[in-house]
Length: 313
Image 1 (cartoon, rainbow, N blue to C red):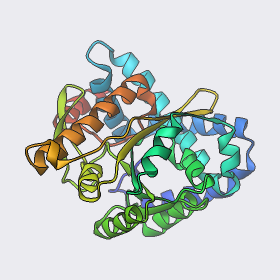
Image 2 (tube, rainbow, N blue to C red):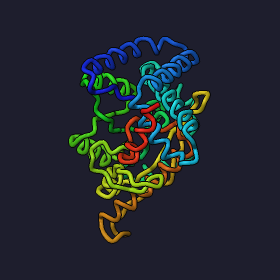
Image 3 (cartoon, one colour):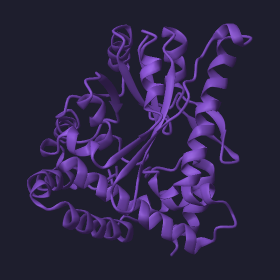
C-alpha cells in the first residue's frame, strides 16, 4: 500500500475518508473506466508522494541494475504506482466481484502443484510477495472451497485497518494482522490441513535474515521457513501478474520442503529455505519489476544513498 506520511496529524483521517469514498464509488464505475481513472490517480500519487516515490525508485534502481538509467527507473516506478492504484480499485469493488468473475480473467499455471501439496495432509504455506494483486486473485482459492489464512500489515488508524480487513475477508479469505497472536492462528490452520499465505519480501517485524538479494544483502522475513520446519508443511511459492488489459496470470512454483535432517542444523536449514524463496522473488521481480508493490526501502543503506539522488529532483 502507499503509506500516508505518519508525521502529518490529519493523514490517518484523510486515508480513512479516502477509503470510505472509494468503497462507495468504485463498485459503481465500469471496469474499463475504473481502471483508467485509478491509473490516473496512481500517476498523481507518483508526482505528489515524494518519500514513497523515492523509496520505490531506490528499490527499482537496485532491481534494474546500474545500466538502466534514471529515466528507465522513473518509467517503471510510475507504472508501479499505477498498478498499486488499480489494486485499490479491485479492493474497493471486491464485495460485488464474485470469485467466478475473477476466474474468467485469470490463467493459472501449474495449479496441480498446489493440490498435490495439500493432499499430503500437513497444510500448505503459500509464499508470495507484495506483487501483482493477491487481494483479488486470492479470492479464487476461497471460491474453490479452500480455507486460507493470510497475514497482513496493521494500518493506522485501527478503523482503517478494520475496513481494509472487511474488504479482504468478504469472499471467504481470512486476513489477520501480523503479530504474536497470528502465530497461533496459522499453526491451527496448518494442523487443520488448510492454506496459510505469507508475503516474504518485507521484514515487518525486524527479525528477518540478512540474505543476498539483487546483489546486496537485504533483511527478508523467514517466517514461512520456520513454520515449514516446525510443522512439516510444504512451502508453495506463487506469484500473480497483472497484464496491461487487467487480466491476470498466476504462477505456482514447485513445493519447497524444509528439513533439518538435510542440513547441519536448524539455522542452516532455515537459511537455505529462505535463500530459495529469495531467489524466486528475484526471478519474478526481475521479469515484472512494475508489479512489485513495495513503498518502503528494502535495502536500507543502499536506499538512503539513492534517496538523496531521487529527492533532489
